[in-house]
Image 1 (tube, helix red, strand yellow):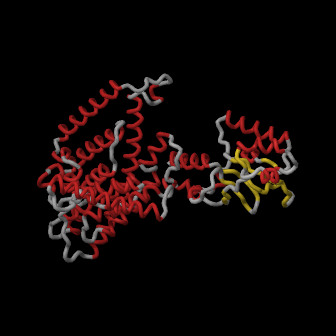
Image 2: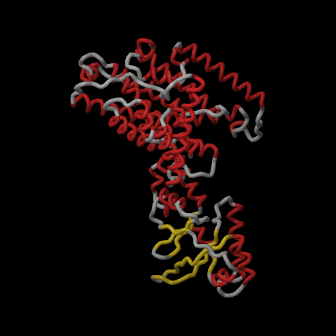
Image 3: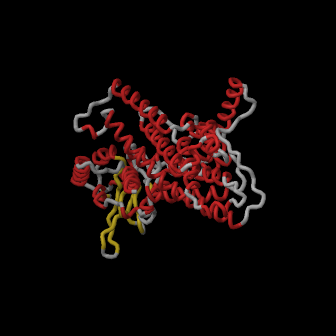
Amino acid sequence: LAAVAVGVGATFSAPVGGVLFALELMMPRLYDTSSYSACFFASTFGTFVFMCLNMFFSGSGQLKPLFNSDITAEHSPTLGAEILFIFLSLITGALSGALASTFVLCHRRAVGAMNALRGLAPLCGEKKAGQSVPRDLAIFLAAGGIAALLKVGAGSKLLTLGTGPFLSSIFATEAHLQHPELSSLSGLLLLFLAKTSFTVMALSMPVPAGVVAPSLMLGGIFGRLVAALLPLWCIDFLAPDGDFGQYIARLAIVGATCFCGAVCRVNSVVVTVFELIAVPRLILPLTLATIVSNYCANSVGPSIFDSILLMKKIPAMPTLRASARALQPVKKVLDHTMLSLCLPRTAQGNDFQRLKFIKQSREAENRSVPRMVPIVEEVTHNEQQRLVLLGAVNWEDVDALQVAGGNDVLVAAVKLGKILQEPLRISPNISLKKAYIESQSVTRQGPMMVVEDGFLVGILPHDDLVRSGAKAAERA
């Protein structure tokens, strides 16, 4: 968490934005007061070290931001022009959110194709080719050749610039004078396609690559595309004095912030951008547009980080806000057959044998098995047999309970010592997202016992919760 804060804070010279980015990226997986303090200290101190090294090696006397803009404050903007610009920013945000989700999908397809070329994906057939250094070297050389051809074919000097100069040029009010391709719709479209190809190719390669700065660059180009598509009456209404370059730069900043926020699925990028370029009257449209962008992106699919989790099948919870389906109640994803893994309080030898047989059968069918066995007592309620949860034991302690014998499993568990566990109890009506947050906020391990009106109605293993969240994000 602290490393993320340092990376963003030092790279962009925005320590506060780095802290918020790191915390937002990891919620709800990890967050507490100590984490916040550690991130704030790490980001601030890391930026300070970067400043000292930069001053020592380059002779610079100050900490320069990664990018800047020459936008000036307007003296008397009309209310109509302000409302129209906010409306245009919201449209830019919505389109950026949809486009960012498409970008994530393209990245996912590119990673699949790259793994297939490297012999690491099922696309190669049942017999995988396996890793090969010569093959990887050939892929690197081919990717470099394609990138060189794209740069030559696009004929844009912007593609030869680094992140900071590129963004500063995109955010400049008179950038079209130095870069003629920014003044035409075809030039902007070609630049956007070329930069998208570069970024997707770089992110799909088996080497570390960043996504925050490239997504800012793509969003800046898209913001200028939106400005180029505006009708003449809209331009005259916003800038009756003919200085429309101010609004082009503003839309470029809005596009960059929204696209980056939607790709990474964070809102804190607004703070990072505003920490670097405090553009007058831009904080409100920038914030609203980023919120709209993230909302639209959440309706389409997961962020790029959650997409990587799904691709690599890493056992971690994707950001459940990536889909409205993640707000469904726990009772809709319960596997009620898992109640057969309960151990009655008055269990005898045949009950233990039945329990072990069911466990082996579920494992053979690749079905989930909870890490704990709940101890229950059957009671009659409203002429129905219901289960009352008394406690739980780990699977490795089941044999000890069977050897202990007796007519009361609960008493035997207490006599054996610290084997009786108190599992986390949740309601069947809470959402999957809330269930995951509750599971992360307690120290108790094992499955969650779903209890309603005092009776056990289901068992939700953590693996099932992760799988449900992954399926929701996958369907999105």
